[in-house]
Image 1: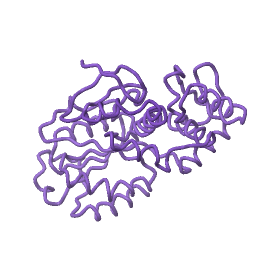
Image 2 (image 1 turned 180 degrees about the vertical axis):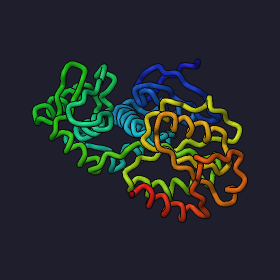
Image 3 (image 1 turned 90 degrees about the horizontal axis):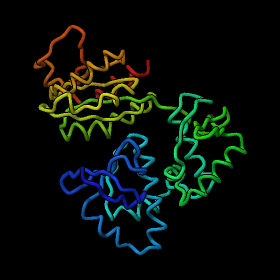
Image 4 (image 1 turned 135 degrees about the vertical axis):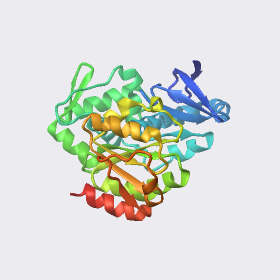
Length: 297
């Protein structure tokens, strides 16, 4: 596999070329995940003045880390750096940076007192958008002194108060992971993201989309990602074999599955099973209302 230097976390990392982009796999910017960089941006970022890189690149690394940890896909170009660094969403104060660490522990635990391993710290100071390990250690000590977390070696636990603070700063409700399986129709994908996903979030779920073509096999699915979910929404429009497979796999794990299909294809389904009774929808707006009613019960 090709190796390349990650400009943002300074690690040598495996990459996979994808058209004009390179996918960076598993570095400190996205442990266990990936981010994508426009290949033509590499040289221009590399040639930035040293002082500019010192003030920008660690922030971009933290930005990638936070979004990919929330299962969002991140694509970066050289033109994005200024807007990322200057975004009002980027924490600046020590208090705000500490809240990001609390939110990370909140996302990775089911309740107060559950241990979360962070190791080594030297590869994780982007959790707090910090420029150095020293600042991360200071933030951990501060949160410990405030009785918001407990550190035991390489494990960290939110206290009851820390859990409440993290919940409040994260919006008050911990959303349950939800996988949405749809075909690779670009218009369908866009409509679902813009109209349907916000409504699913209002019902307590954090939707992630997995698009599949009619020819893509079940081997292209990451089964562990399916197993992590509390709900699967499987849209049969396009009749992707992968959607059937992934939803069937989820059923085998006792994960609830809601089947849907556009009315134009409702009578053309290849698989007609007693247990598959999809919600038939005409427009995404109609489907949004039906799903919101179903999920709010």
